[in-house]
Image 1: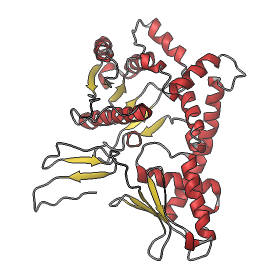
Image 2 (image 1 turned 135 degrees about the horizontal axis):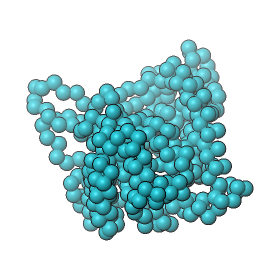
Image 3 (image 1 turned 90 degrees about the vertical axis):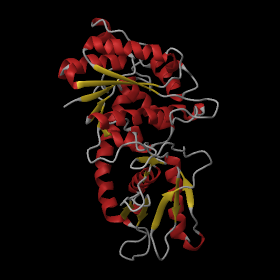
Image 4 (image 1 turned 60 degrees about the horizontal axis):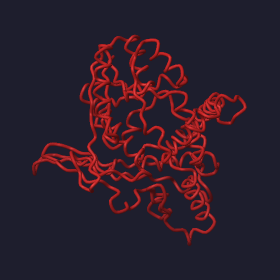
Length: 381
């Protein structure tokens, strides 16, 4: 089986390319570098990565994202987003390119260079976001690529998976691999940009991680992730059971309906009776509706939870509540708790250009829009 290697050019991804190509053979590897174009030197570095991949015998492709900071767009890529959302949008587009490569070449697995330091940073980031047990479990060893690129994954029955084989390796060990094997790498200066919270946390971890008693010690943070992953696995089984019996997912409208009562009984339904179960059911439903590719913040889930409690205390005064890109409508005689897409803010949904007859695009990360000749059978979802 062939694999896609997500190669940035840093020591972690270069060590990944060396190790995987030696383990499975370079002919089974297809390396992809997404050049975001944020730095003047990024194009030169991407070309250097191509030379290094050829040295390892790995086929390599560069895809460059073109940004237009004046407000227009080039090649269907919107203008440069504000710094607060820059990392999020860049990640979405990077994984969209990865998904496209997997689809075009029929490859079912993507390997990334995420390492122990990245996992520690993710734990702290999600702790600050109050993400709860699921978020603080960190990155999983394997996840569907659809979770990372919900807006662009093609309509296929076999979506690729993301595999992170280096999560237990510290960055120093990856530097050592590159040094001993004579492999060059590039240091991305933007990784030190203190405007980004992940970079701030990385600096704190690097400064204090050698102290075994420090709360920012990487080993301590990874142990916490392991504990949370055990909780996540058990809770996931329970949540699956509750969703199967209490939720209706409507793919045509992108809405979810949760039952308001159990067999007509008064009071909270089973899925909402336990606070921990309720939180996870809400998180799964909200994530399915908003298609953001990451779990909602705990504060937003608590906002929905308070709305539920308010309804069951005094149904007559309950109203719709919106957060995390989702609006929750209280039960009526026609439906239970209804979760739907929150009305978008101006400019939130990017336009798609170039839709031609016979083609399809994914719009608003949720809807497949197809164009066909009049009279042809076509289904928009």
